Image 1 (cartoon, rainbow, N blue to C red):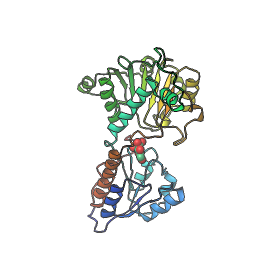
Image 2: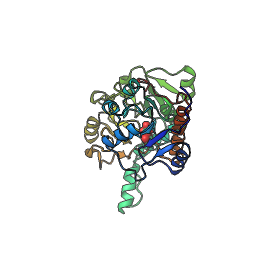
Image 3: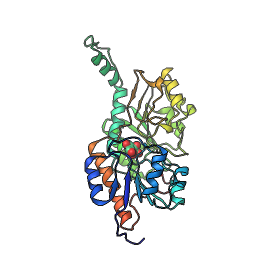
Image 4: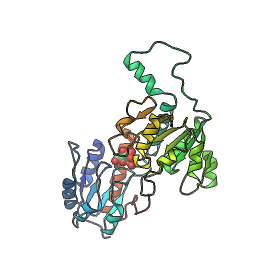
Length: 330
Ligand code: 8YV
């Protein structure tokens, strides 16, 4: 690709941290969204028609039909985030539009949040907080709020990518037994370093775990990977943690089982319907729900912005963006 002389026209769909927006303004002709409104399809299509680069977040679905109407100007979708399941990557590629993401910079923060949920659910933090906030605490009792000990518990990590491995390292420090299932087995040295036992069979692993953490990307192959049938394999004392994507778990089945006491608890940061959790999950004492805040740190959000800028700048300089996503890669 020949080097471009003009600055690319870059449209950003959501408000980003101020230093990121400022730097973008220095480097590119940038169109921001200062009131952070959620754009509908038509507004997104218009933006794509007018821009060389669009910087969406997971709140903007970009499907093949929209790309059909995007016109010929758009050359790069530089996603602000690691997951790209909201973007029709293969359709974009067919139309000569590149897609990039921001891997790596949200690994540690998301792993921290997974551990926070593991601890919160296992040690019943939500119930303790609720009692204190209501002013209902009747004083210490030897048998009140008894949770489980983390040390010795079996943690099964479904998806041992960057985030799965970062969770394994933390879990080990808490004395947990780490198990994992993954498309491909890790190298022996990595397994030894993480103290992680590989399960070729997801079903067999699920049946034996005390805590299951979901850390696979959402793809057609992982949709409802934790199906009703698979959830039924789990011990009734087990806990499910999801900081990945809601679609990987059959949320209705999980809800039914939590309510019936067939699964002991859940810590969820993500939901099948995006920003709507199944209402029947609310107010369950054994369930902690968070509003998709796994990677929500000031540092992480700035580093995500820096990654986007690097991808856009590299593209503008006529090279392949370093975090190019190819169809079927996730
Ligand atoms: C981010 C995420 O908040 O990067 C991802 O895939 O799920 C998140 O943690 C999100 O991407 C921001 O767009």
